[in-house]
Length: 387
Ligand SMILES: CC(C)(COP(=O)(O)OP(=O)(O)OC[C@H]1O[C@@H](n2cnc3c(N)ncnc32)[C@H](O)[C@@H]1OP(=O)(O)O)[C@@H](O)C(=O)NCCC(=O)NCCS
Image 1 (cartoon, rainbow, N blue to C red):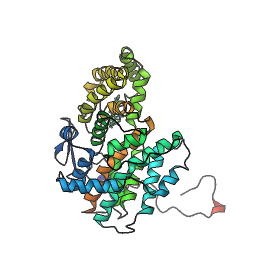
Image 2: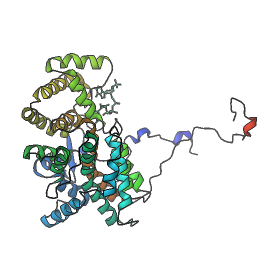
Image 3: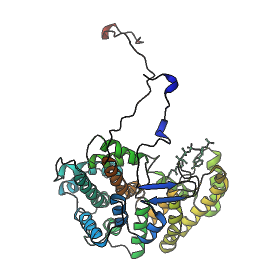
Image 4: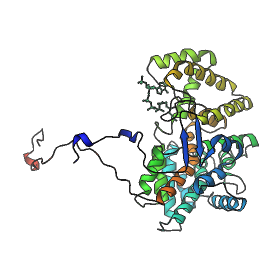
């Protein structure tokens, strides 16, 4: 055991670097986010989710033939195995969609034709299959629990439009499809966060891609990670109108509660993803007749920035993403699954990058318990066990 003086505990692994990576860079002071060197603003403006997924996984922007092959592979995976679809129909309607997704991704490994091949290519293909099939699983469960039949995916639609189509039963217009696509790009990757690290821990034992992504989904589920947009939306809805915002924010802060969708471990300034989502939330509000909710959000934001910016607390991606998803007709408890179906791309990219230079993740715990305790036979143990 190390002597007490030489041990440095890194609770929560704050500021611990666990790998080299060329996938994502966050400049938290200057509100910058890059995927493989490309700014997230450029990608959201000019790219598509599929192209960004290729970029994250392979490391370069695809040429046309590369892109077409990649999209073909994703689309071949749109339809889940029949057994998974049949299983979705057996679930209690109140099951949380994140529990359903976690279990479904784990189930996919049972129907993988590649068996135990643990090579990089086999794992990459598994990753692409998960990216392709996840939207269908989420949308199918959302419909089944509403008591309506799942809608089969359309093979000629990109992932974002297809998801809205399968959820609603009608194809989205170009604006909704484009907003969904941008939201997926913005959620596709974010460096070494908790769920990505979970994926890596699992992959580092030479387990497989399904297990790694299952671990990622399980970790994303927690409210400290994936659930803040849902809480932000509920808060804004509870405020009710722009005039009530300042008073509501004062009440929340006086009660020592947090404004959801504010603050970030890495960003100490505006989150660049927030800056892209905010105007989209406004445009959606105007188009869908939910402008009052948007204006309430803006008033809450203004009041919160006035009170919190001195502490370097600014709105993050979650402040407006809930409004965006809500305006697109996505049920609140599907927000985190939608986050997961976007983040699949980043998870797959990180797992493959890590496996190319794998090292088993095996940290240490600093032992503070007893040693050499005398073993006492069961019948001779008193109420208070000694030793
Ligand atoms: C994201 C988050 C967990 C990052 O936290 P962190 O960097 O570890 O910062 P801490 O939790 O140590 O908070 C530092 C201080 O800021 C305050 N603070 C942090 N976020 C706050 C918020 N959203 N509203 C009000 N105060 C906040 C804390 O109360 C603490 O104040 P204190 O020093 O007086 O106790 C935190 O900002 C938070 O809980 N935000 C709300 C949830 C959210 O939006 N999560 C999504 C992140 S993408």
